[in-house]
Image (cartoon, rainbow, N blue to C red; front, side):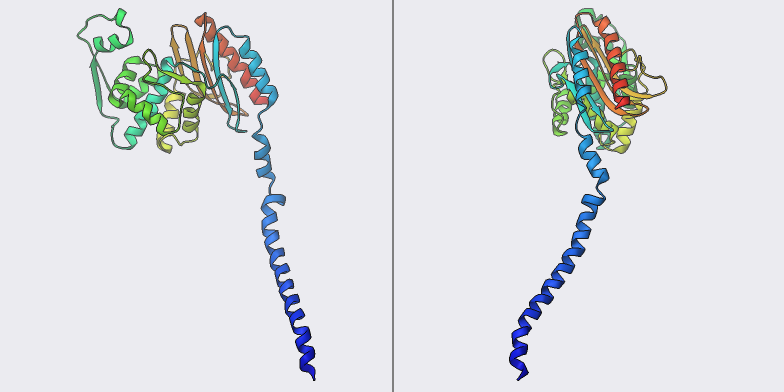
Length: 304
């Protein structure tokens, strides 16, 4: 009578077969799973560990900034290793002409949406603009200041022209520019401050990083903004002591005791954001001190 024996061994045979099939499937899945996360994970692990800032560079930066008279906010982001080095990066400073980065960003956003055209003409009488810039020094005049948007953007960034910046800012609206930055999750700017626009070094750095990454509005707008910054003609701070054969896209700012500069630096071995905002007792000396700090940090990041 073979049937009782068959019934006794049938269940163990079925269970054994299922177990073998499960092992086979698991082994196939395990290979698929392990390959990218262990054997093929070299690049992933490198990225994880490279995100840790070099403590020596941070300590060096802190030491150098502590030697400088006055008050400084510094934000550096090494884009090669995605590491940040900073001092007072969240402290607000008067922007001086650094605010023009925000105006440029918003202008390109408006252009991309069809709210503004590069051919649009911006015009205002010179006396009205002078009243905003320096009321005590303004004189009555019949002169009129006129730019189209494209020329205003170029003058505002490359030679830090104030008339073009005011024309653009008034066209866009100061509050609208401020709101736009908040919508972009860039906090730290205050463009409607009662005396002067203010910002943190970190917020300025975030705008520059988006421009570098081609995510400021869109790729084309980012490239155009980058080209304007690369054409900067005021080069007495961050670029002063750096090699002449590297590219530096930056915007400066000066006002009373304020000396600022914000740059994307394309070094030979490194690419990084470098923002310095300062309030200095002797601003003329601060200009060169920023230049010297720039050279020291360039040397450190090139070695890293």
